[in-house]
Amino acid sequence: MTNTFDKDRIHTVKKKHQNQKKYLTSFDSRAFPHVFTDVLIIGSGVAGLSAAIQAARSGSALVVTKDKLDENNTTYAQGGIAVAMADKDTIAKHTKDTLDAGQRLCNASVVKTIVSEGPSRVKDLIEWGAKFDREDDKLIFTKEGGHQFPRIIRAQGDSTGREVENTLIRAVRENRNIKIFEHTFAIDLITKEGVCHGIITWHAKRGYVLIWAKRTILAAGGCGQVYRETTNPDVATGDGVAMAYRAGAVLQDMEFVQFHPTTLYIAGAVRFLITETVRGEGGILRNSKGARFMPDYHPQAELAPRDVVSQSILKEMQKTGHTCVYLDVRHIPQERLYTRFPKIKEICASFGIDIAADLIPVRPSAHYMIGGVKVDRFCKTAVKQLYACGETACTGMHGANRLGSNSLLEGLVTGYTAGIDACKSIRRTKRDMAPYTVQETLGLSKISWLDLNDIRNSLKSLMWRDVGIERDEMRLLEAEEMIQMWCSYVLDKEFSHPAGWELQNMLLVSGLIVSAARKRKESRGVHHRTDYPQTDNTRWKKHIVSSH
Ligand code: FAD
Ligand code: SIN
Image (cartoon, rainbow, N blue to C red):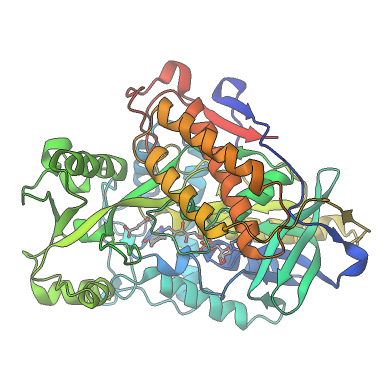
């Protein structure tokens, strides 16, 4: 997984964000309790738990997570894991499909490594007790958009993420070298001269605690919550990317936010994902007039790449003036539907929709952050002793568009890689941990009368309206100005609770998405600019990296 891009392939954005600071909170290490571990892992999804299991092979590992252990994107994953394990499938075919989807921005050697390691990591899961759906004892493989071959394995029909997460949790809980701190918010990485030494955390009862580590692994997931419409749970506020940026790490591809075409759209309800495999099983998209429209947009119709389906749905919504389109699975036998998609059946039924008899109202929403903390093939970041993996990282696997079901795979493989390398590098250096006195005095006002919820909701609406599926210079500029205005009075305050820190992180991450989106004056993959509709390989076949 090398990110050895030559200079022509990188465009650097050095943006001075207002009130840029290294830490979000004032603190004095002499006043707070300390905890020590060999390897510290921030996040408890597929990447974090995979990393912890490997990191604990020859030392202590500590997993810090801001909510319950299983509250993360991983748990909500539905469709499955893409893995080249079916009889006639090959690593070369899976690699090719991934590269095709990425529209010339994937790192081919990263793709090949991750795809090649996939089968071994899935076999680990099976060995640890994961039960993937089978027929006659053989794994069942499904097809999703952009895959030329059925290669998606799943569990309990549409609850793959829950099975993966539960399996990893069992393995972690059985491992005496691994400790878990739940409901513990990682505020910032402690760094000195470009080296990471741990983190500062906050817990509702224990207050501030400093955790010192020989190696730190960021596996804090994505940032879907910066958008009003998102499939991501509340924890996905981009904290990992924001804290890495403050600590001096380099970010890459922040303009590439993937939108999932089909999220259940019922006003007031949480945006529940309707997995792409529903279309893989024959689901048809219809507009509000009942007409099937996808064949008009792409030869692969409902199984066209995700960006194409999302953009087509948006166009149909604009054409018909309706707030959503509909997924039609009424032609699929009821028994098959109910056994194949039990969770979707249950959730839809709770809103009075019988998926076998009714149309399902859907529309796109923000789903996955392709960009993130730039890492090398060992998942090392630009900050020494700091790794990143899973959705927080930008490995180069997805390029400009992620192929469905490739991210659980990436989380499994990169978590494993980061955990192993952290463990090995500690053995190689044999240095003791050296905690030091560290103080930060921000001297900022601590007002409590800001309505954080109001700003958070306004930011999410702005991002959805101006930095969503379709973008143009005027709307991006408006978003940039609004975000800068909010930054001027939100980043200028000091908060003593997660809601404040999350909002500060969301503003920072949103600002970085907008800067990169303004910079890329072309359309490619998930980044669709109506004022620059063409892909420009002469000027823009390169990455945008951000650092301060
Ligand atoms: P996560 O699983 O999101 O874990 C991040 C962790 O970091 C969480 O535990 C969180 O609490 C913690 N954290 C964050 N900030 C802090 C902080 N400040 N302090 C402490 N802890 C923190 N991908 C597929 O390949 N196949 C699918 O079928 C699929 N379906 C999906 C369905 C849905 C609804 C969603 C939302 C995503 C889906 N994806 C799917 C994408 C995939 O689930 C994610 O990309 C992947 O699970 C990310 O794993 P992760 O370990 O990097 O992050
Ligand atoms: C889905 O099941 O449609 C989501 C798959 C993914 O995001 O990879």
